[in-house]
Image (cartoon, rainbow over all chains, first blue to last red):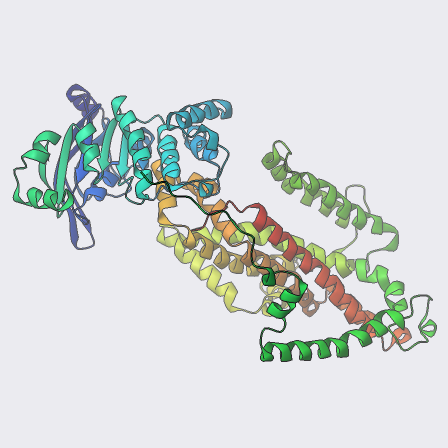
Amino acid sequence: MSEAKVESVIADRMIEMVDVNKWYGNFHVLKDINLNVRQGERIVICGPSGSGKSTTIRCINRLEEHQQGRILVDGTELTQDLKHIEAVRREVGMVFQHFNLFPHLTVLQNCTLSPMWVRRMPKRKAHELAMHYLERVKIPEQAHKFPGQLSGGQQQRVAIARALCMQPKIMLFDEPTSSLDPEMVKEVLDTMIGLAEDGMTMLCVTHEMGFARTVADRVIFMDRGEIVEEAEPNTFFTNPVNERTKLFLSQILH
Amino acid sequence: MQTHHFKPDLPPPRQSIGPAAWLRANLFSSWFNGLLTVVALYLIWLIVPPLVQWAFLDADWLGETRADCTSDGACWVFIKQRFGQFMYGFYPTELRWRVDLTVVLAILGAAPLFISAMPRKALYGIVFLLVYPLVAYWLLHGGMGLEVVRTSQWGGLMLTLVIAAVGIAGALPLGIALALGRRSDMPAIRVICVTFIEFWRGVPLITVLFMSSVMLPLFLPEGMSFDKLIRALIGVILFQSAYIAEVVRGGLQAIPKGQYEAAEAMGLGYWRVMGLVILPQALKMVIPGIVNTFISLFKDTSLVIIIGLFDLLNSIKQATTDPAWLGMATEGYVFAALVFWIFCFGMSRYSMHLERKLDTSHKH
């Protein structure tokens, strides 16, 4: 492991996926995924449903287990070793499509849970940290409400604050705006753009092409478990190389 | 540009409020409902006045012997005379203060747990749960300076409460552990838990009690025996934990996968995921089922008659066979029903209160 650590620090790589393969039963969902993400890089992954884009980012914090290939996150390789898995999860924040806030805890308690129980921070410090990030996503006044009392957009912003409270090095977004009412998409995207401007390493599965154009360093297009095309946004949108990418873009950009 | 003018909110139309409208809507909305209302009123008239007549108006309240019951109504003198036996069984009269003290300590000790502003509540709760059973055992059973009262002398409501309280306190944690085990990723643990649950759910409680009392001593080495009540308590705990486990499993299954994922993605380990995120939600969801199990446990305590223990119901039954008080069965059983009902209704109301209190306006 220490050898791997040295190697990736030199390359300034936060995430390294080498020939990653994964199957759900007999279904080959990821095929030879190779992906390197440098520190501070913002990557948008798009593609039709069932293309394996969510599975790809869920492999990065081991919510899904890959069966072949190697995944290194900040120099730590993901193996069966629970210690490695928990070490990686401490450095990787995740935002889900359906928010997945804990409904029995207040907004503030949602945010202080991991600082207190994973980072062993004293309660008062965890509170300060949580309030800091809730202010950053612009809902400090909702701190003592329960998630069920907030709108979808507010809930997703709380989910972002909750992930930031772990002070992660990497943020993963799994279709963060897909289950929101159209009126609320903007507030969440604005929060994400703010985060990108501050230099957070981000991987984002989304169909918000406007967002991809504004903040992404690279856009990755996946289909049938493979990375089909990978380019910086300007090239990707104006001059895609691959036939399949053109078809996809023509369908979602109308 | 045009501006839309929104209409003001208006009060509801007149005919939908007021007592007349309520009667029409709830009792006489159709000819069939009207008929049902009339029949129900007739039944109430048939049942309630004679009951009140028997239980209150014609009842005998004062006196000391059966001869004092001269009217046609209920003879509550019987209950009054035997009240001590119904509450304490054969617990020595001069030592009954120890039982009273145990109950008072339970109430005083648990009270802070119901004050929402109490600081360090969790810590206090754990200390209370660890210390109180020892104190209660010492007070009830004796030893270390107190006169020993053997469990064969325990009885009445006191015995009912001991079995119910120990059963609940033991079955809940064991049931939760079994439910988690049944959903474990480790096959060995899963198989053990499934076997345990299915075994205990498959046998009637009365068999369990009978086995613990009659069969178990046959398998134990010569001269080795332990208290009959303890054997019954272990039987009740193991039996009820299987039911609790299935109720809790239902709650665990109702928690969306996303909750596990969100908690795991934070780097929380298995026990923290369960203890901080999953179980608080799952248990809240199954409060009605858990309380239902507790209520049935409370009532099942009377089955201990099969092994010769006299709980509230059996103490009353025994008293009705006393030649001096023949013919008092109705009064006895009505009293037993009333006491059981008060406790069970109390549990049911408390569970409803708990559900409301824990409601965080979340709908899955």
